[in-house]
Structure formats: structure tokens, C-alpha cells
Image 1 (cartoon, helix red, strand yellow):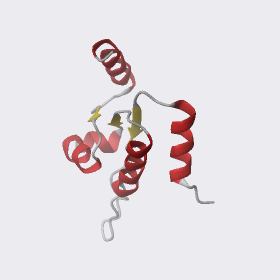
Image 2 (tube, rainbow, N blue to C red; image 1 turned 30 degrees about the vertical axis):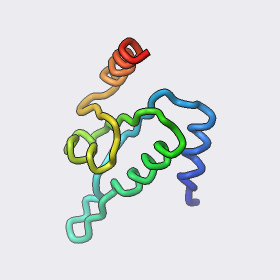
Image 3 (cartoon, rainbow, N blue to C red; image 1 turned 60 degrees about the vertical axis):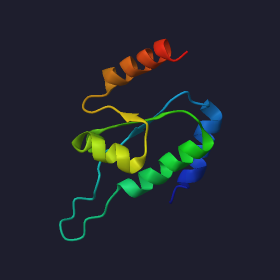
Image 4 (cartoon, helix red, strand yellow; image 1 turned 90 degrees about the vertical axis):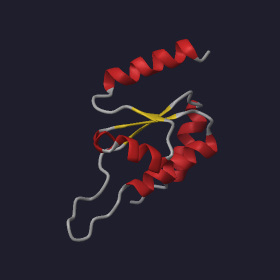
Length: 102
């Protein structure tokens, strides 16, 4: 069964109307030495969908992001990212943004 990612993203954004969107990047490639496939292109499409449907900033995180944070942030065109353990850092980021951008 193939998922229609565009419809899934659109439905989620319409339902929630997010103030911020978090995207976790688990892997940047499929780790096949002879025929490596970049896995960031589908994420780039998801981020473009988020931008088209919402004005919310996009925050990246996850293991794949943390390996090459600057490069991945620039390639995907997100607003910001959290390198390393993000569970507590994301909450702190939300608190900071809430206090400083009201």
C-alpha cells in the first residue's frame, strides 16, 4: 500500500493549523555502497508541501539531520534544526519562541 504523502501532510496541517512544524530525519541515504540513494529528496518535497500549506517555521531533527546539520538544513530549506538529542531541546525551543515572538 502506497501512501499519498501530499494528502497526508495537507490533512494534518488543515486539522492542526500548527504554529511550528517538526520534521525528523532518520537517514540521509539507504547505505547501499554501490547504488546509494539519497533519501532527502522526498523530505524536501514534504517540506515544500508544508511551506505551501502553512506559514509555520519548519524545524529539523533526528539522527540523519544531526550527522550533517548545516548541509541538510540548507539542502532542505528548513528554518532551523536541533542537532543531537531533541526531546528536551525541542521543548526549550518552543518555550523560547513562545516568549520571544508573541
